[in-house]
Image 1 (cartoon, one colour):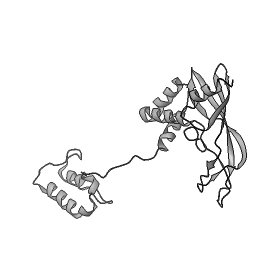
Image 2 (cartoon, rainbow, N blue to C red):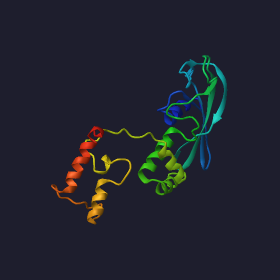
Image 3 (spheres, rainbow, N blue to C red):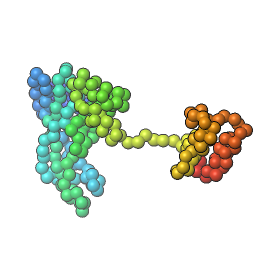
Image 4 (cartoon, helix red, strand yellow):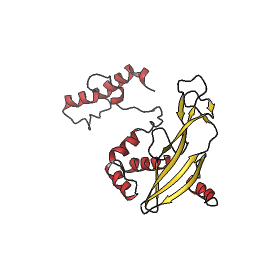
Length: 212
């Protein structure tokens, strides 16, 4: 086992630092990986100070990506450290970047895979695909993972539509004009020199300070 252990570390946790594989158990349906953390010091999430004083340890069982059609469970022994500074958090559990997160029941690579499935296929279709990948989750789980993502970075728009410069209360100018002319809001009057165009120009002039 001592000669195979470095190869297992490279194979299973090549992109993760501070994790050592101790044992590997394979059954008909499950692959269990026993591992432990090896970092000498960790930073407190409350104050950011480094500490190496260990309070205790416990086991976590995050699920990982399947292999050869079998479920993979990581039996990870993590430690609880004592913050020696004047911090509100007296003790804290260590997290392995790229592998675990607080209150997480899945590894980060399994989580990112489920998020990609949810973004591509949404709820029901994504849940059916997870069954084929041997990581079955419900559609609500996929939607929760998507909802937990940070908002994308937005840019300042250069062109705004009619409804984007209307006041908060009251119907928009386009709908009022369409009701007067008995036309559909999807097909407003389009006469450049008419009353509709002059109304839009006055509305844009009043809200010029709010435009980018």
